[in-house]
Amino acid sequence: MDNSLLTFNKNGSDSRLRPYLTGVTEHDTKTLATITLYTGTYQPLAAKTDIDPLSDENNYMVEGVSIEATPQSDNKPSNTIPQLTEAQKNSYYGIFNNFSLLQVSESKDQITKLHQNFGSSWNLFFFGSTPSIYTFRGIFLDTFEYPYYQEFMTMYDKYLMGRKCVEHGYKMKLAYDGKIVSGYLLNIQTVLSNDTPYSKSFSFTMIITSEEFVRNNAYRQVSGKIIQSDLNYNRLDNRHRIVDQYSALFGEQPPEEA
Image 1 (tube, rainbow, N blue to C red):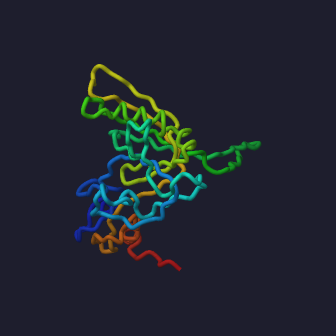
Image 2 (cartoon, rainbow, N blue to C red):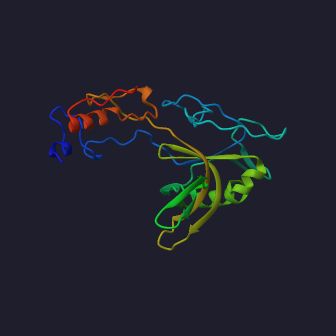
Image 3 (cartoon, rainbow, N blue to C red):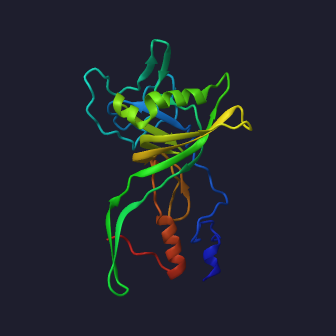
């Protein structure tokens, strides 16, 4: 292989066939891992950057995320985040950012049937996808000032577990790392250790019903110049890379789309 394919061109454009980590920029989406309970149906809204989380009731919604409607009871308000109360003692909104997310394992699988014939031939049948189940791991603070472990576990038993969400007519979204997923919590495990008296580690799994990315991605022209614009929301475009690689391999431009 021509070594020129593994280096930068003199004009600075990338002609390599593999990704690189020199001079890259971290995504500008500074996501605070948050679980939101809600009722009703929200329409997609434009992405916002300058928001007041205490006054803008829709600040947690971003373009590209829509929630399908489900029948709600007559006495349950729609399009709202519930206020969770108990015996007029506690007032707690259905927004949970009281956990520190350290690791996410995302699993996607398909339903398949492999049929082996006589000899070396075989047939493979696809029957759709199995439910996606993601595993989230992290820590809860557990101090006098920040009783987040107690908060989350109490609300899990009363509202957050999948069964309780269904009983109360709530839906759930979890935002993390420039992504918002919808689904239901299946279980949770916590570990208490004397080595970490101010925190408790946790692991919970969530069955995923839908997911959307909420990112602004860099867009490059064929010349290699990066275009930064608000119009690049969730944009994925590999033309600049393919054109450079095709030209380096074959000395000509790739054919245009018919």
